Length: 496
Image (cartoon, rainbow, N blue to C red; front, side, top):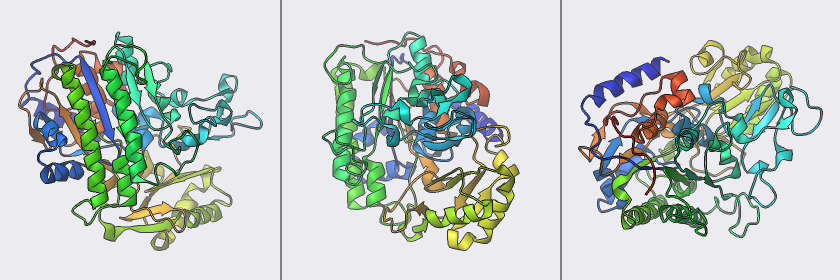
């Protein structure tokens, strides 16, 4: 709460210097370039001053000190953007977590605790939808399967815009990203979630796309074409007519994959040639989208928000260190006198225990082996309670969170990836954030005020003339709009 109040104060101080927007916003386009750090955006613009990203920055406000929520994974990162809340409000800590009140997908339907696994593992065989038989069940509600949107505790900007009469669309990387539908399950009118874990011919293969930067770029191109169809007044498939969305957007993956496979040249974030090429591919796609908005005479009424669900780290290749997640699991299991209920690892480790009474023993045992396991600190008890609800009072909160030393990735033995996300440090959280459009006063500004990506959600609604307080997480956590522009008097949401 202290951090939210600090952000609110910073927003109030900076907003006093900003002017109200001169023209109505009828459309908001949200683009998440996974892995895009603030330094990536600034470095790319400096290296490529004639790029589309440079042109976009010249007509917008660049927030140089923006941070996503922790843990900095895709699910909580996306939900920050569309709900205005941290995991403390959304109840979603990762795409693979544990809920103490649920039952597993098979066996007796009792509240013994269950994996809430919302990644490609719950896809139907064709990768086109969600297989209900793979979902956890809710004993409190007739043992019904719990879909991703039912797992989310608060509503989304898509729910609010659609309730206000707007048309909505979103494109993302797994069918489980239907979580953006919100608890009502109907926030997005045109949802497109092609499984990234396929080989391009609809044959499930979770490594085929993301093991290749080129194939990921092809995947991103397909999703961008879907959004261009929406700009042209069609649904994402380009076949049936639809309104131009009031709120729409997509997730792009090629920068994320390039950071993992190729990484950076140095601690300053100088991209390797492969990463620079991936950034250029994203730049080209964004240019195509901007050109289509202009061709359809929608550019003057469309606010573009470019950001990232998360960063990736380490940026400094000399810091990279892989630590076996099996070794971490073994220490936890020995200290807890049994396997953890769930261990989710990447650039941090989220630990759910079967017996919370062993939490202190597990924490101390981990810290005693901190050098071998690459541990910086362990959050539990009061330290954990400063960020999230106590696990004693919330069925979703991990019992412990392991914060690794700089550069550490918890992974399978022999892993070779050069970066990953899901952590708590700057490389994972300090992301790009650019708000652009011809309706903005004083374009080309760079604001250094600390902001959170949770502020994107209320800003979207304010820009469309809708009430940010209609978002439950915004109301609960007091999330302010982004500073620098006052969105007063803008109520012209709709479509051309």
